Length: 241
Figure (cartoon, rainbow, N blue to C red):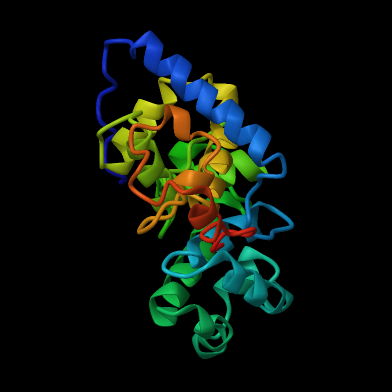
């Protein structure tokens, strides 16, 4: 069984914090109008698998492997019946291929046995699947089923703490804290906006503060170079997806 979610706080967030957070999100939305999931997929099963595979690697590497992987194993039944060695060979370039192969075999078998080969569209069901936590479940819900969800990856967690939206470090507590600041309908796109900004400008080691569109509202302004010319050199036109 998945771990129980922590209790939601009873107190409402500060009104000024809510306004600042939503202003930042609107500005990021204007900055990244094309923001979306950077993993390629054709259906919920593909999105579920590539999200699991994206751990400890880049979306670009996963996208390169995807056509071969689903050309060989297009359905949960086909993947559940895959020969381990062949599956390991396909996903080998992604690293941790033995553990990831084990996850895909168990995940696919669970889909066949419990859900007739269909990816469930409920978070409570998704998190019971092998290798699927709340982050992966929210990616699938938001992008394959249009069910709002907040994706707390390393970029999202880093930025919301820099923005001063929360001090929490536990991903589930972060998810709930940020969810209280925004209407549910905005959760999926909020995730994309923040993750895109983290990949392109608000880097972990050296954020491009002098080129940041939300610098005026960011308590962490100055952690990176504030000179516009110097900061511009750090901006990536594409994230480290």
